[in-house]
Length: 178
Image (tube, rainbow, N blue to C red; front, side):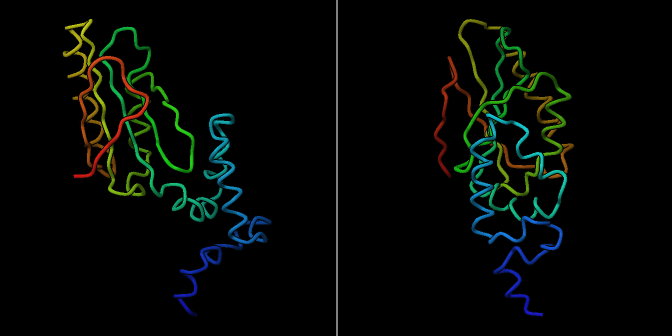
């Protein structure tokens, strides 16, 4: 068997498990995935199909995670209903912040997330400071400590890049590689 040919044609790996989907050329299947990525916020469960078939997941996961950036925003403001906000940024998907209400949800997200699939295995942690509440430093410290404890228990420990921002958080943050 020619192993070079297998790498060039990803649909051959486990393709018998893709059902009727395998009858489509790989290029058409990638177009279908692209449409699903853009619809992810109008139909949040649209990618749950990837959980039920590992062959579908294997086929598209490299395409899905390529160029993705994992951002987390922690705020010490008392008026915040969420413990922290997570955003997965990719050229393939529209971007939206998702709030996690408690430490259990944060732990589940970080422990189940495939950090090894993201280039550089980095998480960008944005700490938001407000001049209105001087006591927030204590809250932020507690959240950051718990966040670090969760990351230590995760199967893969990503690199964490921390930014401290003052005032209202911007919609986008430009990052530079060092």
